[in-house]
Length: 316
Image 1: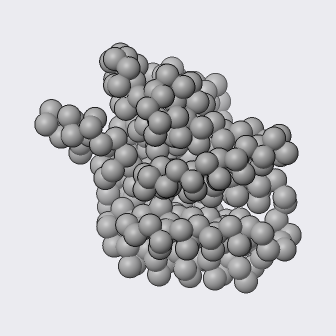
Image 2: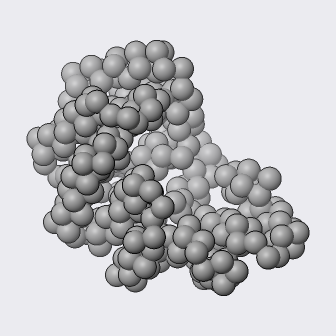
């Protein structure tokens, strides 16, 4: 119940449910860990750290709380401290998949600092290890993450190609996870193609994503397809259609950014303000958040910057 309230940004109700949860299970780590995560989602970073540490006091081996501390410092902009916290728990990863996921989160800290050379080094190390471990979806995610912050179109496309190649190789990873990652790659590549005004690539990848969505029947793949449809419609100036599709991918900062701009274009100020609040308060430790949300917050710090953001909704 608390997470449902939190996802719809009804945090007061979420905290009431979380308080009750911790009272019912005072000697277990997970309630404190969940309370911390929801506090972080609400932007209450200091409270999140308190609850993560309370979780670790109950059980020092509750590794997800240690990762949560690293995530919180990362979102606070304290990237060196975040890496130190991640490093504490990295040797304790119970399996290769979590080790790869935590390495991904650490790599994102360099992106937040604007140290793209450092980020490249970290992502490539992760991709090499994931390849060795046969975790194709994580290898692909590393290359896809790198592609997202490349300024040069050809460099981004080369990395997207590496990501897709990693998905296509033989792996022990379940097909569904590989399909989800391929859909994510196509979604990101459509975003970049639209930004770089490459309509041919956007249409080609949109068709591929449509076929993948139809064949997989997976909700997450469908969500990526909806976001891509919305992005393409936005690029054509069809803002009502863009809104209808982008609303289905509300946990992607890129879609929220375009959704905000689409509401602005159609005069939906109240809806635009609501999306702006949601985007500015998006506190999940993912690469898309690192690349979109801090810039959006800065752009809305002053009226002049806000007007600039409205005119160029997807250039940072």
